[in-house]
Length: 210
Image 1: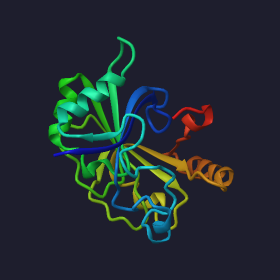
Image 2: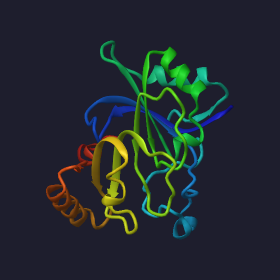
Image 3: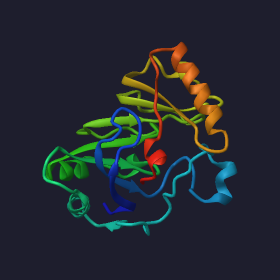
Image 4: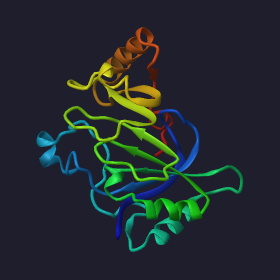
């Protein structure tokens, strides 16, 4: 298959269970919860998304005809000679495109493979790390993984709906936007009262990196 990628860039993982870890982010184009166009936001399942995943015109983006070609592009972005090379497949919704063939090509390049998904698609075999961020109104097909990261608060997506799923880590991440300070306070209070949940902050935004 041809893989459509919005952008590829090297940065530090900013949130969840592995903050501060160097990673190449591969942002796939397209999502099943929103077209990505502002004119469609009011009709989207996920109305708060702040990510540009439309098209293939970002830095490093494009259409890759083979899994090997995309794996080579990811590898070229990596810096340094030490440490485990790490790729985070994100979107949009990466599991609309990420398949076992591409995971195999990543592994052949010595890459550890993580995915950040909304959980509405089945996960292919071979992933090294699964982070799911459920969205209100989107039925889940993925019910296990490494990390559940819930943007908070969401009407119709309360933490107690997910706390019995089979994940190793449970995070609340304050919803960004004009109410970020209030949402951070609410998420902090919830974590203090429900210690199964930990607070995730978007540290990349705090220090001004992608």
